[in-house]
Image 1 (cartoon, rainbow, N blue to C red):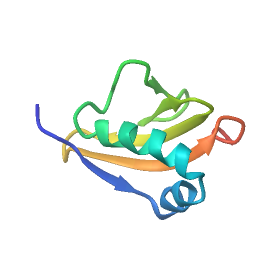
Image 2: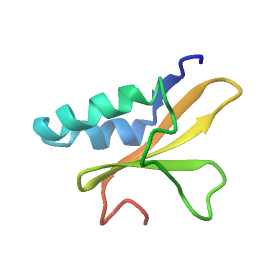
Image 3: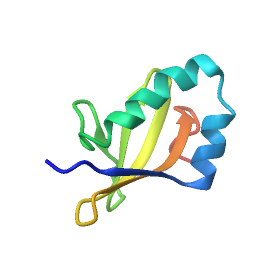
Image 4: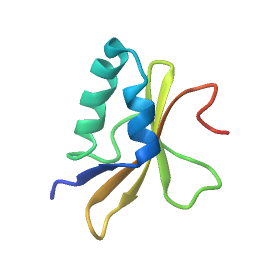
Length: 86
């Protein structure tokens, strides 16, 4: 299986940088594993969205799109669960 490239939207990068370092240390390794398996156990496809997925990391959600033809995972948002789906 080919490895996927990980890209972060500018807004997602800012959301990640604004988090506490302990949260970053929990979230970043999970994002890196998306390069190997973009649809890990526990991921969910977002209803009403054509190609958006999410993984859960504690109270935070990483929302991303998968492009299987070019092997790219685009991280769109990294937000607390209360704000993730607005």
